[in-house]
Image (tube, rainbow, N blue to C red; front, side, top):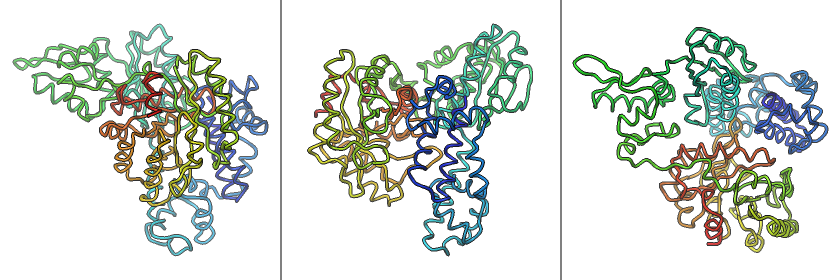
Length: 574
């Protein structure tokens, strides 16, 4: 798949244009195209071959031609030309979260700093604050951004790791030499970022499998090749992928061991030792009179059964109290993908989506949903095609008409209304009361002080027409970290005013994260899953949100999307 290659080039073009002070709307066009292509679940090459690139959001004929050039040549003439006009180090500096083009340009012109290394050294020594507009706090933020960038380079976002893992699993599954195959590690636990990918197989002829593994199209470099283990670097970000052959009788214990987490494995070893057993990747062994006898290991289920525990889902294995609860048979009954009855955040052509409301409804119907929330941007967000008040009423009428036509799925006419700097909302209450579903969101002022950002969200929660706060912490992988908010205060107000918090399923967001989902659950604050889809294909990202919800211990009662239509409508009309 060339999705990441195209997305990366468009993202870098946007940064280069920013450094050159080009038209902000042109810059935004490349940024949006990059984001939408990177989040596609299908191969962009398929769209190109079928001449359907212009059906993607933000892709006109000009960008479509550029995508075709990238697919064909691996680069873009315009991109190569722009790179020659800007020092290479400045582009790398632009990758630092929170560091804008104006600051990069200022630092380069005044101090001739043209690399991240030089920038870090200058920030630590206090040289940057000598420049106009740069204070001590700015230096601190730059150092935080550099640290965040370094961490990001070490790990791969879950959605990319899943694509790469499946690129290996699918062809290997088809081999007659492979009896069993599973992905393990943090991918199986569905952590939001992944360091490497572990795959386990059972095979009587592993050499054939290893030959296939090291020659797959994703492979960039072969690190090691052996009979029982091989390692490669794969994908655009060259993540390490390890393939291990294990014995059939030890597959369950090996899967458990290599799934982890390390802390979970330590807790199980302590439990085993206390009960007179030894547990490792080869099995569970009873220790009697100095001798070892294997008593379990073929499956994970028999290991849990041996310790009188129900099966602990991989997403829960982080030593956050799940072992203790399992021993008491009190594990949370976490949600499953099949529990999801609707998507509560989808964009249509009324703002910056590419599909009509009816097309979205029919797609939701094919996904087996009972309802779908169409939440387009509000009037003030011009860059995202915010919906005017006049068009709001046209949209409401269209939704009513569609709901009269469709029998299996209910369209909820919603909005993603902007929370303005003073905490007021981008539509008056007289308009907000007309919507079935109101999601409030911050889209500007990310660098405001904690008290101001918190006040804005708290104010939105107190508006009687607001049902959900969208992507509450504002993070975007590789773009910005979460903004500073008092999350405890927001939870308190959300609980008091019965406002839900969104778990945004968009691959670069996954916001709320698993820890914050756990915190919300503890305060009895409901969670709303929304894909934030701008094209139909992105509605499939619901799976990512469900993974986060599972890691956050969420049960069906905690998640609005698991409720029946009748129950949801009663809650919305509270």
